[in-house]
Structures are given as structure tokens and as C-alpha cells.
Image (cartoon, rainbow, N blue to C red; front, top):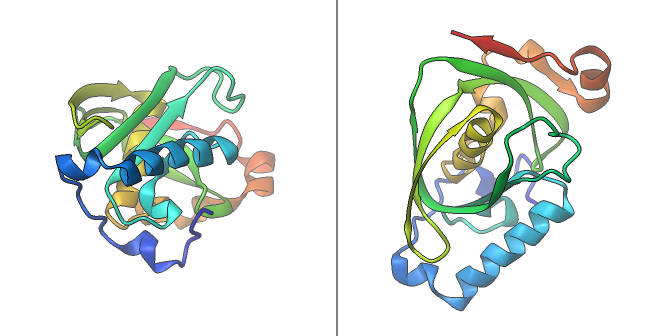
Length: 179
């Protein structure tokens, strides 16, 4: 179901949606399917290109029942369409990111730790919301997918790319906050 690194759809800029398109049964079903797929794969986010749809739609959810992120601020199921992300600080945080489209790898990526998200929700209503910490990183990660980018493109140091077993052995818990 999930496109893997190397599939051309992951490298395309996805199509923006009109408000009329958002309300179509196809898009509403796509959003529901994306949420189901994100949960099925134990992800915290998913972008439409990852499920072979080149459209600017992403979903995110950080819940208490996700054991990988127990200390993070919870984020209810959030749908963001045609997103614009604006950093609100120069301070970054380093997170070992993984991706459903890059199975088996983690890489250290530094991203702004405080952002503003402007987008449309699944009903075409405008969202303007600030996010900090891991949620801000996750939103930037998913938004990248809508513009043909994957997390390895954001890595400054490719020596910090690891297979999951080696990541767990040598790097787990290694996060950095940089000014």
C-alpha cells in the first residue's frame, strides 16, 4: 500500500486541491483510507503521495496508545490540505526520523522546533495552528512529502543514517537541540 523510496510519485510536487475537490466522495474516502493506513502501519503521519495519490493531503496523529512516543504532546487526528509551514524560531531540534516509505532506516534530521501550520481541514475550513517539538517535526516531515522530498534529503550528515537495529544499539535516545 505504501510507496517506497525509489517510486517516482514520492519525488513529484503533489497537486493542490480546490475547495470543491475536498468535498468530493473520492477525497473524503481517501482521507479515511489514509488514516486507516497510518494506523495499520503504526505511523504518526502519512501523506497522500505515500499511498500513490499525488495530492496535497497529509494526516497526523500522536496518541497515548503509541508506545514509541509516550512523552510527546498528544495531537488528535489532524488532516491538513495544501499546507504552508512557517518556522517561528531559528532553534532546531534533531530527531532520528523514520518513514513508512523508507523501511528499515532512521536518520538524524534537524528541523525548526516551533512552526506555524496554515492549511485546510477535511471540510475545507482554514486551519492556523502553532506546533512545537516532535509534532512540529512530524508536520514538516509530512509536508515535505507533498513537495517531493523525503527525510534523507534533509539530513546534513549522512553518517547519521542507520538501519533500525543499529540505530537501537548505538543511537537510541540520541537527540540534539541546536541553537
